[in-house]
Length: 371
Image (cartoon, rainbow, N blue to C red; front, side):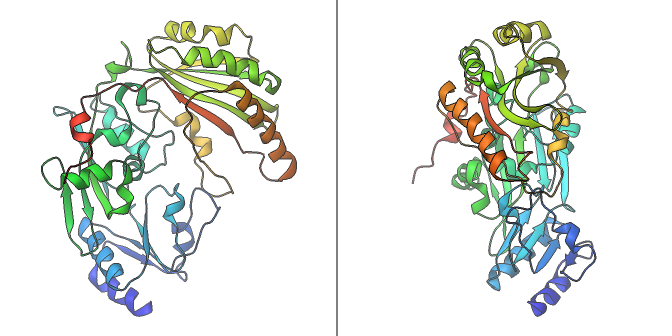
């Protein structure tokens, strides 16, 4: 490995970094969103250019050394034992084309950086609920979002890609070049190479409503009302004449104890939010807060969840519908978790809902390629 690292240093550009466990900056470069299953690589390489990325991929493949890329460090796939971490934080750029309603995202761009860049041009796109999540890995993995009811999943909005593959080439995947690869990248992109760039479809904020803002409404209830709240919520989100999204969760507040939280999101004016969620408001929540949110500040209210370290996990499973009886069991399991495992006080069990996803004329481009 020492010879490999020495040779790699000579091959990549001077603006790149190569860190080994003996370097002072190595520990920080190996930090992740969670300590669960975090491993220690033999080397962390931070390429400065796309060419550098291709060189590292080819060298690692030739030497039969395993590697993983890292952007925001939220994924359990961004850590490796005794292999190579390819840190994309030095290679990143956002190029917005408001006339074509597209944005090119390169390398290690994070969600907040994309939101700021798009907001300057009065555009928005599908983004994750976390300012420090990497844009490219989120999108090529599928990308569910609060904006899914309006513009679909993130992967549906990918127009083209560039990726570094095993032989050191950088391939272009689009509707006209390697279209089967583009199809694969829309949801399973992490398996074919390192995606260095995505061109993504953007949209005008007016899709959210007249003011181009998203309305957030947060309500808290005692856990004893789990089944009752869930039944009312199910009736609210089953209506498809408006676009809404949100979370229904059981959580533990350090000062207030265990609570149920309904965090609804509505695309439209504030009064419409209140009308949509009126059945929940009439239940008399312990606390009810309403605020508008711009695209640029989409996830600012969740910054407390984005710090690195600690033993925490974020997992999701698709559900066909909301089941009040099942959610009541989930509330009981949450209590059992807190009672039996010290250190799990920050754990949250949640249901994320979205109203029906619209069709965007992507059928032709999103079908499986024929051979």
